[in-house]
Amino acid sequence: MCKSRFLLATSALYVAVGNCSSQPLTIPLPPKNSEAIPNDLQSFSLEFAFFPDYAGNKSSPNQFSRNLMENFKNITGVYPKVRVGGTSQDNSIYYPDQNDSIELVFTNPTDDQPSQINYGPGFFESYQALGDMQYIHGLNMKQNSSIQQLTNAAVEACRSMGTNLDSFELGNEINMEAPEYRPANYTLQSYSNEWNYKTAAIKTAYEKACPGAFPGFMAPSFVFSDIVKNNWTAEELFQLGYDSKNLTKDLSFHNYMGAFVPPLAPVSYDLQHVLMNHTNIVQNLAAQIQRAKNLAYLGHPFTLGELNSIANQGRNGETNVFGDALWLVDFSLWCAAHNIKRLHFHQGLNYRYASWQPIASEGNPPKTRPPYYGQIMVASAIGDAKDARIVNIPLAEDTEAAYGIYQGEGLSKLVVLNLQAYNQTASRSRPSREYEFKVPNHVKKAKIERLSAPGSDSVESVTFGGVSFDYDLLEGRPVVVEEKEDVATIGRGVLRISVADSSAVLLTLS
Image (cartoon, rainbow, N blue to C red):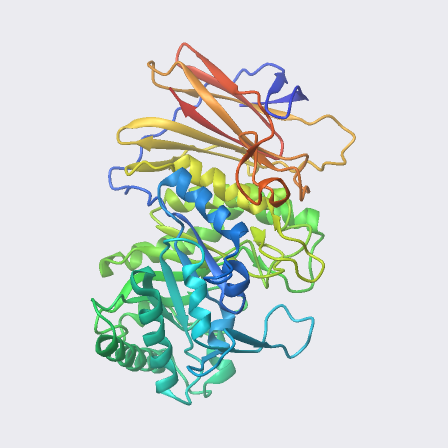
């Protein structure tokens, strides 16, 4: 790899100027114990309070959201899996006689989330609006006034959702939230006992009212970060009799790169050092990867059931810009290379890290945002192959990353990211890095699909492979805006590719 200056010939074709003297990079083989990447690796978590805004209902579906979901199915062969939950699920009460599908009560009009959510049977119509998808329905762990309210919600979910109900989730981030609504002497053992009692009641009610086998739970939905004050661990939890009836379907933990909590560094600093930084991504995920290994004996898939870039709904200038999309690609592929099975990127109305704004609200129009393009790139890297495996290709700098995607035993794709920040207003020409990779001798060319934008600080004009998914063009459906096909040539078993600062490329070998 070498640095080189770079001219933009078209938005799809980059011409590098410079020489590279380093040896071509060897692409490692996947470890023998690596597992195939699920096609729904890119999945979603929708904030409970705002689910009807994202989905619409049976009579008036949100076609924009539906189109964005169908894009994934067209690429991978499956829909993303959707968890409906978050902080607001533990402030949500189900009322069977309520006429309105949902009622939101805000303590302050400017709050990101309501403090109280009342929902009725009409809420479940939203599960019919986006297509034949699998959902995880969030249940309220916080309220203790009535076990009947809890079981009523679970029964209505199974009756209304049928085979679209993948599983339940009881409670959100209880390890962080427990001090807010449980006694001071509430311990990890207390939580284990409470969860076991309530999940048993839910299962009993379900089996009385609904056909088929009980679907199970996504659990325990803990979050680990500097802002969590207790020292609960998942490893200890499962030694305390937690889930003694083996009702867990998927292990779920939450993950963020940081939090929108003052004091804050400038957004440009955080974007480069927190998000567009491969070393920081590796360090951030190290504990989750170790946790997955520690809990592998349970036999459950390990997922990140809620995640995004910066907690507390993100930060404008850092999480709503193109640099966040590049972070998302590197983060996702590092997870996939380490057997994390599914990534539920959290979304909410007006959230500053959202992949899309589903409806007009607070002056924000419906819009496809940069992170969505990162998700589409990851989905395209995996494709519809049932045996895709991913391996990291070690590189020297914090601001670069590369991955090989194998299909079966053969190398099929490469992803290369240049994470060096480049502002769209910069007066200097845009630098690039040139890479050389050793590829199998039978590979003669590579189709190039670039993830690009005017700069890492861009909020618009993002494309992947020359395609836009903008709301204003075709309501989220793919529209080709750059006709020129980009193909890399290969000579003597070496593939050469230039990657501009603040961009990424997917290479499909043939």
